[in-house]
Image 1 (cartoon, one colour):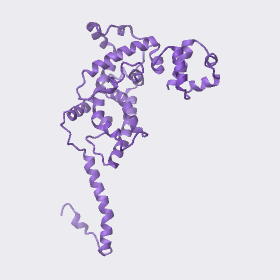
Image 2 (cartoon, rainbow, N blue to C red):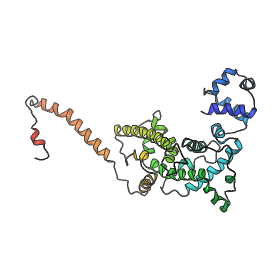
Image 3 (cartoon, helix red, strand yellow):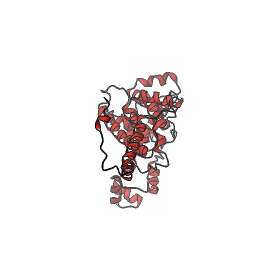
Image 4 (cartoon, rainbow, N blue to C red):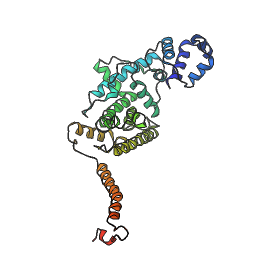
Length: 318
């Protein structure tokens, strides 16, 4: 929903009406209204509005959530610091990509995704950046004090959970999603990686008084992820791709359990492990083949009509 936020941010920054903005852009007031409702905006027009507001590559959704561009930049510094701290404490053997990729870029999605996850959990984002968090992160004494802030504590818990969740995703899930033979780019599972931060947030242990919407939040993201994982398993089975773990664990297991599995896999302890569903699938496939081939063979031997199954011979108690 970046387009509506970009329009709103431009109106707020220029302190003008939609009609004034339309005249400035050389479009109709109706077009501005359509953009504000979410209609597609060209890259060129988006760049013009970003230049007018001076926000550069920062996500306008993130700025509106943070309150001001100045506050958004302070949240960026905090989130970068917490992400860096979490990455250095990871123990899965896998890189936590959401906490490292493009983290120094203003356009990095981790900033908005983090505050949005907090909001969806029922945490009210302060209208102004908390004064006690506006510190020099290179000062160890000041840095230690910020963890007394509830929001910082929760973000830190989420990022540590993300280390484990993303480790499992990297070890057992991503390789299947990006298998070129499956060609899943136009399927819901292609977006599964984007769910990892919210999923990690749903696995932290937190005082529900601090996060009044946590139960609803957890149920929603678990349900969404489980549906995508079930679909991915179906694609994998149809293509005879072996699973090294129960993929649904990603949705329902604790982040500690996921981290341990990822760590064991990275160390090579589970390289030869095949998930039981693969064996079951092979058995079912074999049985279906027999059901198709056996009648043909019996008919060729001319014994199909006379053959009768003696069920007493099939009893396990025999």
